[in-house]
Length: 254
Ligand code: PEP
View 1 (spheres, rainbow, N blue to C red):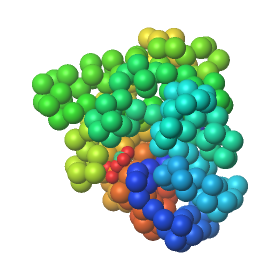
View 2: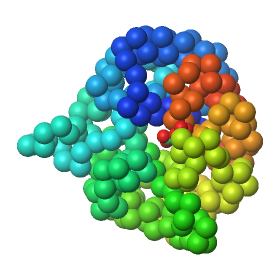
View 3: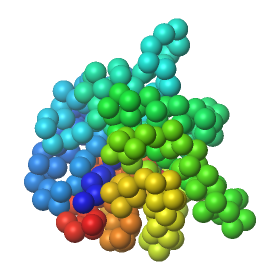
View 4: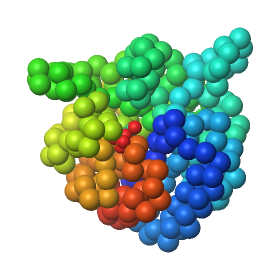
């Protein structure tokens, strides 16, 4: 049975006030969800401990990025072990904004994944093609190469700490969403790539991200290989985020 996950990536947004308002509301609404969805809040790292303090038992917390090292002279970085120490369960890695704006390479993503899983966190490995790559018919090849590179160093007993988030770059923050059929096709392709890597592909959760909203989440989550969502903008409004969590049917995954 795959985990069903809805994770809210706040990006560089938020404040102590927002943590108070939003996490409290999401937590109380999440307590009445009966669809088995794991609800994750991923705030800027500086607010992690505030979110953890508000999250209670029902919400999980994550970080948006970690450095690849365990400690040392890396001013401004945080280590996977520190995120774990502060109560995080999840960490994003290789988000397209990190790849595009900060030049994060496949090798760095792989090193961060190694560090995360070794620290006992779940690495949410973000992959996705640009519009140019999709229009050139290269979307599946690009995503397959990202998956293989990011997960090249996984040991057989570490796959339980991996989630893959397919986020077409052209859909992030643009209001354009992949159709449920196109997203499903890519998720099936990613699962095939994982199987070829001798991963337990059927038990790895695959999330879709890219302008997921309350009104398109149900169609996406109904697809057999879409096990949840990574939500940016819509995770900053409690009602919208909770509606997306509610859109997860109880029997989506096998
Ligand atoms: C994201 O940042 O991962 C994301 C999917 O953003 P949005 O939902 O705003 O497109």
